Image (tube, rainbow, N blue to C red; front, side, top):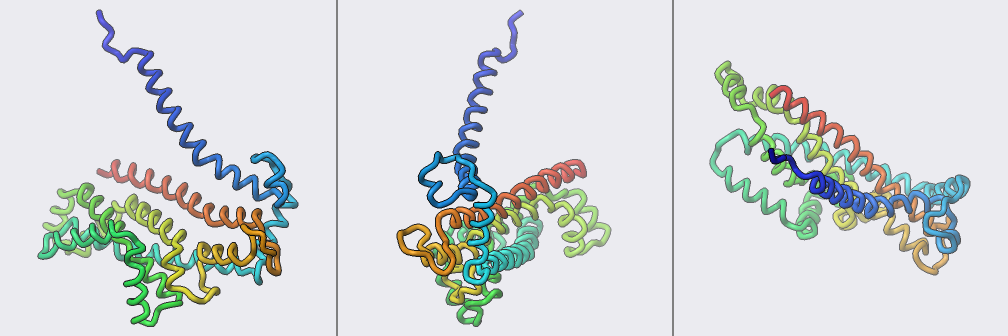
Length: 296
């Protein structure tokens, strides 16, 4: 009798292709990160004289870290704290706006619903740089330019989160449970808080993750809205640091020598929170999805 199973050669070839693609992706993205981690332990001269993946010393890492963090009276620490404030505030605002809005669009029928969906899609695909000037004018009219509140309010504008939430609730809401709750007298607020919201943990994590990445790494909006260097976030602050310290040029450094090793550590400082949030959010989304499937 003929064997209907997939030939071993094809199966092995398919696995080989998958593993080869995964290995290429790991090397493509992992090698630069590995170089960043190792380069932060080396001196300026070692970056050019030694092989790329040479491991430096702990003392050199500490000295480089001290140079970076003590720059201009610990200004880098202030910028990191500002980034955290902007990111947490913007994420909370995006969640408060996106989750109820997406639920309302998915669970309700009302005049103008389709128009709102179209406007949401248009806002979602519009380049973020195209709306910076209108946001600047709006914040200026409200008197919120060059302030924490202004950047947090602007960062909370996240139409992609509304669309993600709409798609999630459109496909995941248990219609039978919702109808039974309506028959039992539950109002719309109770339907949202008691049924929809407990099932929304995966989409909450997903919206929070994408929102955090966008706000944490946002340069242009912060550059336009903020003029006080004490309010800068990390991307804007590090750009100023690099341009004024001579780190990437032959210009002499300022009070504290900021050179390429310090810039490398600064890059790690920007990347590390995103990686940590990705790991945490990925686990939470998976657990939330599985628990939601079990309940369903």
